[in-house]
Image (cartoon, rainbow, N blue to C red; front, top):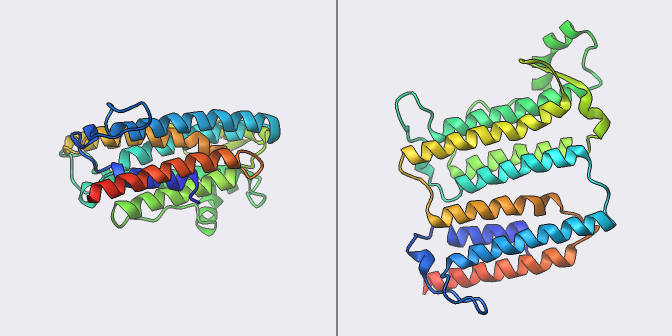
Length: 280
């Protein structure tokens, strides 16, 4: 049985490359017989939204209370999933096409984003680290070497095709959620030093989301300039990824297993159906 995330990925793989004309192909679900194939993605979005509501209700009754850190990271995860939606369906050669003189290609934008993810995480963890020097000047001098010792520096280049690039971003994103998820609310006001001076960890956590949003817009503009703007399918896939985000953040073995399995099974079954029809 696939997870909800795996089922969404199956559905994305079978639909993201469809043309606008393909989206009008006949596809029937119960009484809905005139929306075309696009309704597969619209229905999936509906089901993910409802699942998030159900899981939130179950957590309120059966799970632990949601911390402020979890809420902030949930906002960040939504921005990450939105970026994943923008990147869905891109080709390897889209990464290095220069949009205009002096403008970054997609790969360079993503390299910058990757570096910031490592840097932001390192800043927070350094502020919390027991081996951070108490003296401010010594702490500043120690920062670069500490960052290297604890692997809070991004690779110098972002190599490979679109799958490799997406995986590199996924890995640091997953690390951020795992390392910072347990952070208690009282730690949010602790100061964390970076190039912009001393700011509370609360501010640093919100910067993860804000930075992704800023450069997701840049990626969108770049894709328009290289004439790889979104098709209808890619627009709907982006919506689907955004609505997957709260479901993923409500993942738990304590509640909602039956509800998640039902949605995952439905999405996976439809993905298989579309894959078969595409081959016929």
